[in-house]
Amino acid sequence: MKLNINEWLIKDVAFTLKNFKTKIDEWEHASISERMKNEDKNPYLLAANAALITANHGFGDCFSIDDFIKMVEEGYLIDYDGIGRWVDFQGNELGKIHCDANWLKDNIPEEAKFVMWFNK
Image (tube, rainbow, N blue to C red; front, top):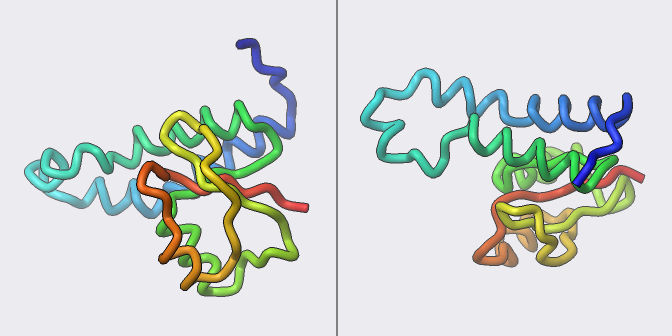
């Protein structure tokens, strides 16, 4: 698939990569044994995959599930601002989300890896 790379796509991908900064910082401070034990949570791989998902969806941002829930809890994201969907590791949409932290925690699909968010 050929991507239509433009300024907006680059900004969306850059913002998605920035979403994983905290997890990358934590990873860098973890011991080698902790990293090996949690290789499936390697934030570099997660960020790279999220960036590809963002590029394929276009005009959106991809967040880790726990970061998205935290942003909802803190009031940074509300349903009025946009719409979101659960996505798996390949970027397949698994269903709509609602910006209610309790609802989010209780309704995470088993195969969900990220939340794709589209601003209005």
